[in-house]
Each structure stands twice: as structure tokens, then as C-alpha cells.
Length: 174
Image 1 (tube, rainbow, N blue to C red):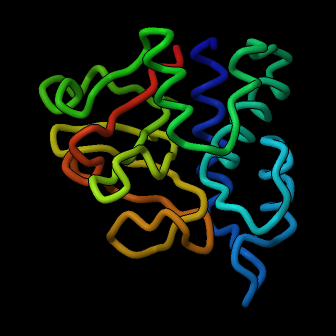
Image 2: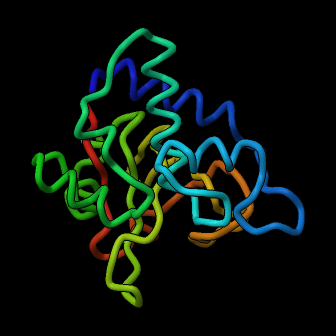
């Protein structure tokens, strides 16, 4: 993917902050329905990966660019995103990022690992990185400080490196 697409996706994600689910209906809402449609899921499913993919698709369209067929096959199951990154040698581990935060760029995907679930369980998009962690925008999270993989909206979060979990990391999309 071209850098311009990823950077535009991050900007579109920032513009989406404040979108929330329909009150009283977990994983439902007008925009949530659109996000989920891009990963071929109906409302009611977790939508963090769908939000991310939707941002990349919208950014590419806005810039009259095309995303690869393989990228467009990515679905709403977050572990598949890490598998895609590993397959294409575009994975940056949290340990690598912590040692060299400059590796992490605006528009990269950020993946959160759960030791309990033994897998990537949440995903968002990077706005910026620093010595202490990353500033992200995440769909299907909450405004609270923890990693909420099934929250109620789109929020900006400041994440420490440890918040990504021991096997979390980043997808170097450009």
C-alpha cells in the first residue's frame, strides 16, 4: 500500500472519533453496519478490524488508488491480520518498536495481544509514536484507559508499549 493511503486512513480515523454504537445494542449502528459490510459480516459482530479495513478502503478511494486483492481479502478476525503481516514480512514486534519507535509510522496497523486468549484480539491505527508508546484510533473500544476489545465506539487512545501485550505489534503497511 502506498504511504499516502495509510496516512489518509489515519486522518479519516481521527475524523471518525466519536462514532458510537446504537444505544443499548452491542455492535450495532449505521456506521458499524458499513464497517462490518467491508469484511462480509452482519451487525452484532466485533468490528475493530472492520473499522480499520474500512478506513484503508475509503482512503484509497479518496486518492483514486487501488489496494491489493490480497489485502482486500483480510477479514474481521484480528489474528488473520498478524498472519498476513508475517506472511509478507511486514510485522514489527512490540519489542522492536520499543527499541526504535521511529520504525512505527502514521497509518500502520497496531495489534494487541491477549495472553489469556493467546492471540491478537484487537486492532487499531497509529496516529503517531514516541519513546513511551503510540497514539492510536481504535474502533469498537471505549474511552477508558484499558484495552477494550468490545467497547462502544471510535476513540483515540494513548498506548504504552506494554499495552500491546507480549506478542503484539504493528503491520508495516508501507
